[in-house]
Length: 38
Image 1 (cartoon, rainbow, N blue to C red):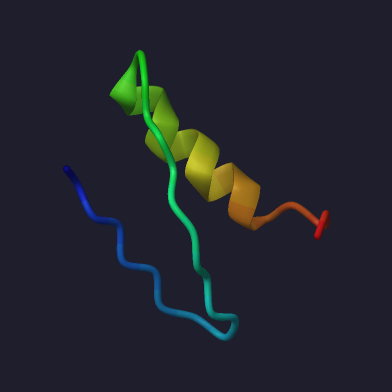
Image 2 (image 1 turned 120 degrees about the vertical axis):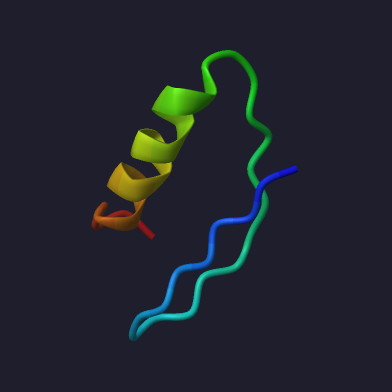
């Protein structure tokens, strides 16, 4: 299992189940960080 470490002003916590194409999963996780939804 891979680990993504993100350093920044807001702490992040959670888990993600990745299925299918793993190359697109990293892009989707990065896009989710910029969402304004809580």
